[in-house]
Amino acid sequence: MNRKQRVVILGGGFAGVYTAMYLERALRRRNDFEIVLINKENYFVFQPMLAEVVSGSIGLLDTVSPIRRMLPRTELHVREIETIDTAGQTITTTPGFNLHPKVIDYDHLVVAFGSVTDFRGLRGLPEHAIPFKNLSDALYIRNHVIHVLEEAALEERGSELRRQLLTFVVAGGGFSGVEVVAELNDFVRRVIKNYSQIDDSEIKVVLLHALDRILPELDEKLAIYAQNILAQRGVEVRLQTRLEAATGVEALLADGSRIPTRTLISTVPSSPNPLIDLLQLPKEHGKLKAKATLLVENSNNVWALGDCALVPMNDGGLCPPTAQFAIRQAKTAAHNIVASIRGRAFKKFHFKELGKLGALGHRSAVAQVFGINISGFAAWFLWRTIYLMKLPGWGRRLKVAASWTFDLFLAPELVQLKLTNAQGVSHEHFEPGQEVFHQGDIGDRIYIITSGRAEVIKQEVDREIGLAHLGPGEYFGEMALLNQTTRNATVRCSEAMDVLSIPKREFSALASTLPAMRENFEKVMAKRRSATQIATLAR
Image 1: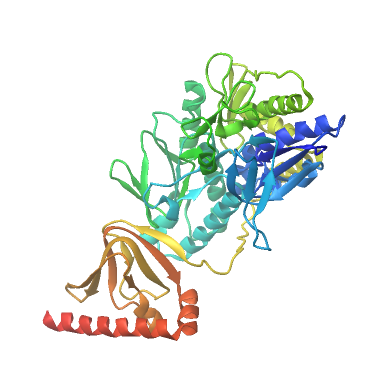
Image 2: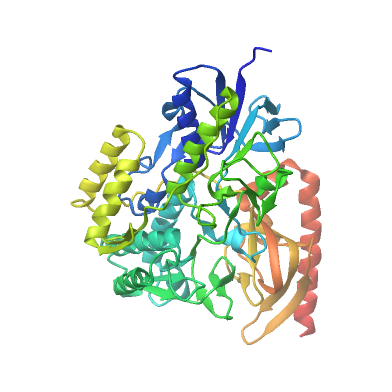
């Protein structure tokens, strides 16, 4: 009966962390409730500066802060969420080392998941597009870009592979897309001075946007200014152009055209976290419908804020999914949770947007503050000043200020961090006419078809011989791996195809551990070899 009420917060973004922060301030006076925050990482990411990690303008850890240090009175659970039971008022998280799930009961639940980049339903994007949402994405993009530059320097000038390697495509012309394409463009054009084999004219950076101008959140004049600045710096801005699909070697556009590339970054589509679907509460467009008090409709103890909530404003509109709104919503939600526990009156959320800021790289930006448009160096200085002061903790601010200062005088780092030794089993997508591998290539992996079809072709001096057609459940590529030779045929996609790709190392481990499996592969290989000989003689 004397148990403290428990407030459980789901999500460690601006909305979740700042709600916990404001709740901790209320605990200073009366220790009558406890706070639990569940997040899959143990750190808070300052999203507005994430693009600068790609270019190296700031250090890898300068945009993140340990949640435990920010919230000393909050119990942190670094886990994924399995289920949310609003009827039983429990949260079940994924198991840890002991393989047992953790069940956490609550009296008040704060849903602050934020949004995710959701590629489901888009051909090839889950397999080949790089999202840009968190620190691991930024680090992966940086390492990948350095890797493709290293490979391009070794390729013959004018080759198709070299063009693919030196073409960088970013989909989405909102703030995230514009900021990452600006930093990526600056970074690549600065560091190629270290590659004597690569000319600046070979670099191609493309920004795709479905609307008639980028940065639709800003005034049209600022958006056009941003487009012109990016174009002057070598970015090809393609408006009214939608990314429809992707393979490992090209981006496919809705108008049927294709862009050969080995680097495709997509900031769209941004969707509500799929965990919202677990809640039996009023929703619209995948988001929870909240009242002005931040309570979810038809609930008296579930609160929703941030990107995953539809929060009404005084003018009848809905709050945009930005950090400045999430932070103010967190303050109102925390006040009302404490008011509910202590029997006080609720407050309604009220906030008028202060402005919008967007960095364009190379000491320029655009800003709309209190209705005033600012661009160029003044906007860039304002962008850095405001976001520097919003960073949590003076230690973090000093680190970032120092990194920015050194960046003015020092060349960007070119170190590629290889954090894993094996790629492991992966999914890949291929479009009709695309070769999975070519006759004579090195055998580095085996493929299992999950959907679609492929044809196997033997290439002679003056002709092609069709050897087989393969469909779902069939595999190919085993001959070169078992015989330690190059590919003896070409496999070409004939119908949009998804495959499981198993690298040589993993396949060899399975084959040596499971003799029966190896024997089965060898029998199939013998049959295919015989069929190849018959087909060749018949022609």
